[in-house]
Length: 373
Image 1 (cartoon, helix red, strand yellow):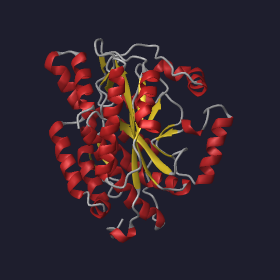
Image 2 (cartoon, rainbow, N blue to C red):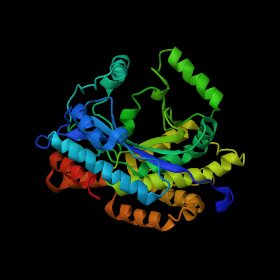
Image 3 (cartoon, rainbow, N blue to C red):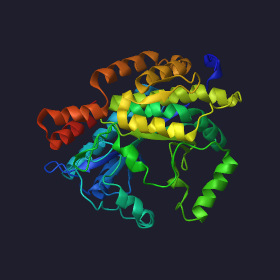
Image 4 (spheres, rainbow, N blue to C red):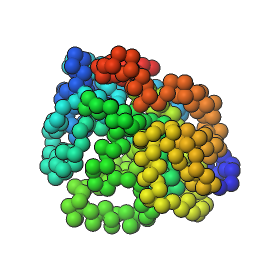
C-alpha cells in the first residue's frame, strides 16, 4: 500500500465492550451476583451495562467516540460505576481474560436465549474450565459489505492487536503456561476463528444455513475474530482479552480504529486484501496466545517473519496516516512506552503470583488495576 494522504481517510467512530468477572472479596472465587449488580448499575449506566451467559459476569459498553480522551473517560467512569455496584453486593469487579479462581458448573443467567445456549452447547460449556472475558472493539459506521471487506484486510493484522491484550495465564486455580488461556477456551465454541472472505450476500446465506442446520441459534453466535455487528453498523473485532489496565484497552482501541481507517481506504480503492492462508493466521493467533510478544508473525505485505513485539511497531507504522490525522501519534507512543515498561497483563499476573505464590494476590491486584484511572 502506498502512503495514504489524510484526505483519503474517513473518520470512523470507536467503541468498546468489556466483560468482567464478579469475585468474592474473601475467597476470591467468582460469584453469581450479576443479576443484582446489573440491575443496580443500570440505574446509573442504563443500556451501557449488559448481562452475560454466566451469572458471574457483567459487561459494559462504551458510547461510540471520535476522540480517544472521550473514550477513556467513558471507560473509566463506567468501570467505577460498575465496581461500585459490585461492592454494594459484596463482590469485586475483576478484569481478567479467565477467572483465576472459579468452580464448575458455572451458573447460567436467567433468560430463554441463555438457557437455550447452555442446553444446545453443553459440550462446549463442559470442555471449558473457566468463564472467559473479552474486550471487543467496534469501528463504524459501516454497511455489512464494507465491514466484511474490511475484515478481510484486517485479518492478518489481528494477532498483533491480540498480543497487546493477553491477560489470562491463570484459570480455575492453575497456571496454564500460556499468555491467553481465554483464546483456547474460545475454540470450544462453534464458528470461531479468522473471518472468511465473503460478500454480504454470501454472509447472509452462510449464516442462514448455519441457523437452519442447528449449528447456531442465531447470527449473534458467529464468533469470528472480526464480524459485522448484528445490533449496530460496526465491524466488531473480538481478539483481545479484557484488560485490567484501562490504558491497554485504550491502546488496542486506538490502534484498531487507526488501522481500520487506513485499510478501509484500500477497500474503497479496490486494493485486494493480502493473500493469507487461514492455517497460517490461526497459527499466528496461537503464537500470540501461547508466547505473547515472543510469538512469531508474518508481515502481510513484506512476507517477513518477525516476533509479534516487532509486529506492533509494524502495525503502528502502517496505521500512521490515520494516527496523524487523528492527532494520536504521540498518544500511541506514550501508551506503548507505558505498556513496555509495565509488561503485558499476563506478565503482570505472573509477577503478582511470584511475590508470595498466592493466587489470591493475583485477584487482588487485578481488582485494584480494574478501577485504577
